[in-house]
Length: 97
Image (cartoon, rainbow, N blue to C red; front, side, top):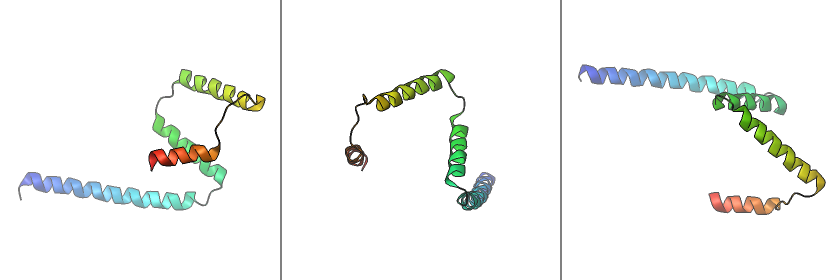
């Protein structure tokens, strides 16, 4: 084997060891996190999702807040037009199965 191949194999070996360590760490975390209450797990899930998003566009966030408030008000007034849950799930299953 030439030096380049040995170096590549060494790098792959290091990456696999790092991946095993991460998997071990992740498995330990999952075990510990499963012991938390639903509220605590939801807060951690929210934190993790936020950490993946990077920069937040405040204008977009404000626009979504406004839209969601409007939709909620429509529901409370009885002016929202919805679809039965069974129909929505059926359409989703058909589309994505």
